[in-house]
Image (cartoon, rainbow, N blue to C red; front, side, top):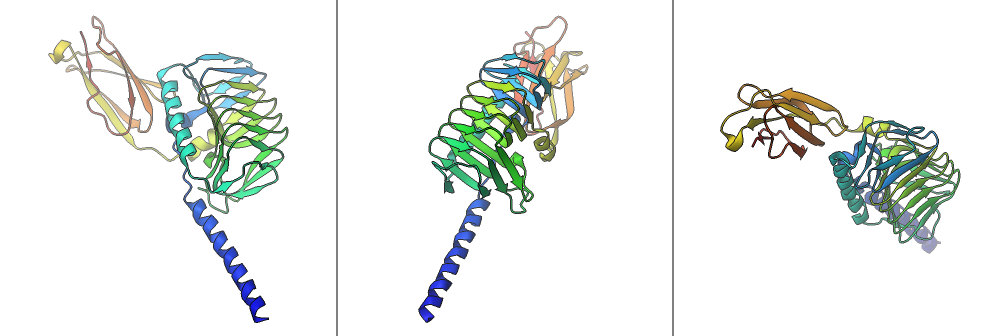
Length: 327
C-alpha cells in the first residue's frame, strides 16, 4: 500500500513539474516586431488580385511588383503603396519578422497532426512540412493579454471550408503569428485570427476573413475573393511612439549659403504628407514626428536642382542634420 501511494505521489509531482515547464517555456515566447509592415493589411511581392467586394482595413503595398486588380469593386481603407519606398521598407521589415519567427525554438512539434479541434496555450508550435486546419483551433491566453502564439510551417498552410481560429481568455490575434515556408490558402468562409507571413503566396477563397491580423506575402501574390482583412485592432493596441523633431539646412553648391523658401515635403509611413519652407538662412524643421517609421523627404526650389532631391529615412531618434545641397 505504501508503494502505491508513493508511485501516485510521484506521478502527481511529475505532472505538476511538466505543467510548470510548459508555462515557463511559453513565458519566453516573444512576438517579433513588424516595423513599418505593422500598418499594412496586405503586402505582396508580385501582385494583388481581387474578385468581389473585398474590404481591407489597413494599408496595401506591393514590392517589387506593383500590380493591383479588382479595386474597385474591392475597397482599401488605408493607403496604397505600389512599388514605392514605403512598400520596399515594409517588405524589408516583414522579412526581418519572418526570419525572427523562423529562428525561434520549437516548444511543441505537431508535425502530421491537424490543428482543428485543439485548444493550445501560448508557445511555439512547429510543423516540419505542411499544416492543415480542419474545424476550430482554440487559442487559450490563460488571462494574459500579452500571450504570444507562433506557428511555424516548413511548407504550406491550408484550412478547410468554415474553419476557425478563435482566441479565448483575454488574448489578442495581434500576438498570433503563422510563419509559412511556402504558400498559404484559406478555405471558403474560414474565419482566421492572427498574422500570416508567407514566403511565397497567400490565397483567400470566397468569404474567408482575417481578423486582428495581416496577410504578408514576401515573394508572391495575394489573391482575394470577397474577403475581409482587418488590422485596425492591432493598430489601436500599438504603444504610443515617442515624438521627435526632424530638421536640417538647404544650401547652395558646396554649402556656401542657405536657400530660403525651398519647399520640403515629408511623407510618413501611412502615406500622409506634411510640408514646410526653409527660412531666410535655409533652415527647416518638422516638429512632433513619430519615431519607428520610414519617412520620405522631397525638396523643390525655384532656380535650383539638388544632388539628392529625395531622401528615405528610418526614424529612430531626433534628427537634426537632414541637409540638402543644390548644384
